[in-house]
Amino acid sequence: MAAPSALVLHCDTCGDVPHRVLRGKVTGKDEIIFEGVVRCSKCGQVRSVVTREPRPIQVRVIVSFLESSERTSLEFSPEEEIGVGQEIELGDSRLRITSIEVKGRRMDGALAKEVSTLWAKRTDRVRVKFSVNKGNRTVPHEVLATPDEEFEVGEIVDLGRDRAVVHHIRTPHRTLHEGRVRADEIVRMYGRVVRERTSR
Ligand SMILES: [Zn+2]
Image (cartoon, rainbow, N blue to C red; front, side, top):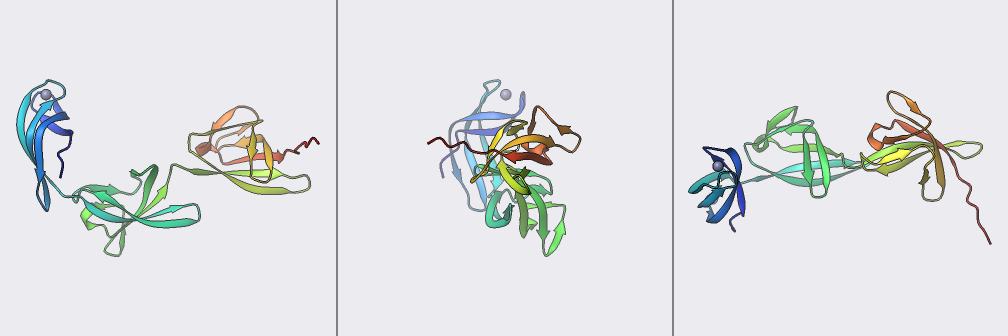
């Protein structure tokens, strides 16, 4: 195994800070043992160290997103605490732990090594409800967005077959008739279909 280029280590002067690895090697089976020479990124002190940490384990995770769910796994240090509500990265997406199963029981928190299955929800995408008036009827739509993406009254939203203009936006606290709101604050948007003008 290749030695890392930097490690967070304890420096007596600076505390827990990144240290540059000047040289070193990584060995070990159940544990990952690093032996090498490091330099503190703050005070510049050079010293040799030996660190040991348990080898990471794979924990089974069931990730739900919209109507589907997907089975995958995440790497944790065995002694790492996992809690419901915790946010974690998985590749390019972001997850929030919604449930933890330990020996058939649901727990609010556990050590990674005790967990049999984690349940998580993707939080890097939200679905925005959009009621669209199509003349004689109102049709519910959903628009996928990133949580911080903003929608604005007057904006035209592409719904695939149709396009619709946003009339007003409801949030948990108010109804906006102008201005913009983050996607994750929207309870529902209301609008109407825009007739396409085709020139021939
Ligand atoms: Zn230091």
